[in-house]
Image (cartoon, rainbow, N blue to C red; front, side, top):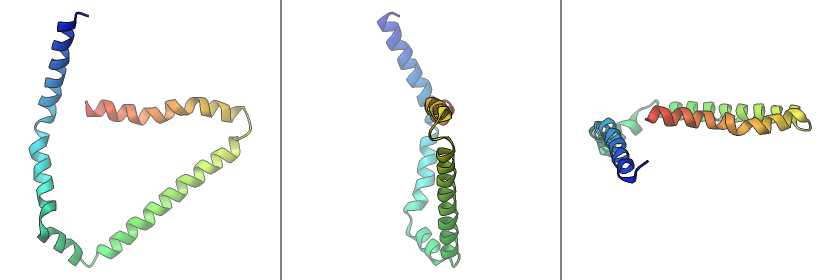
Length: 108
C-alpha cells in the first residue's frame, strides 16, 4: 500500500474512533463528579446496611475464588500425567484468548 494512502486511512480510522468515543467523555465526567462530593461519601458510610453489604461481598467473592481454585485443581488432578493434559495445554492459549478477542471487538 502506498505510504500516504496508509497514513490517510490510519487518520480516518482514528477519526472514526474519536467520533464513537467522544460522547462518552461528558458522560464520564458526569459519573465521576458525584464521587468527588463529600456528602455522597458521608451518606454511604452513614447507611446501616453497609457492613452487611461488605460482608456479603466478601463472602461471595471468597466462595467464588475458592470454587474456581477447586475446579482448576480437580481438572489438574484428573488430567495431569497423560495425553489429555498435553492436549489441554496445547488448547489453553486459544481458550484464554477468546474473552480478550471478544472484549477487543466489542470496544470497537
